[in-house]
Length: 91
Image 1 (tube, rainbow, N blue to C red):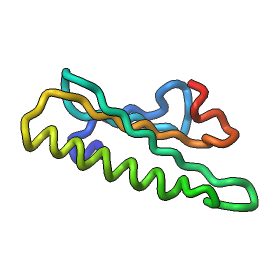
Image 2 (image 1 turned 60 degrees about the vertical axis):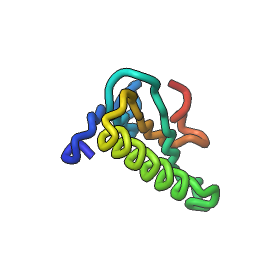
Image 3 (image 1 turned 135 degrees about the vertical axis):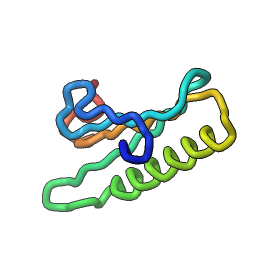
């Protein structure tokens, strides 16, 4: 995402596997939560693989709209790993 002009922070909030990606300046802030994890012995039974993909797509579409329309505003993508037991939402 960095190669495409997005500001990427690695390991924000002290979480090793959690990125924060941002685009834009000023205005309102829109945040997308990209949950991703797998339950031990079950895998992606709760659909987080789909939630993460949808959030990433929505982030990119919103960023491109801000860019193309020259709008004031910020869009942020929060990577949320281990949401169901590893503390990804504890920060």
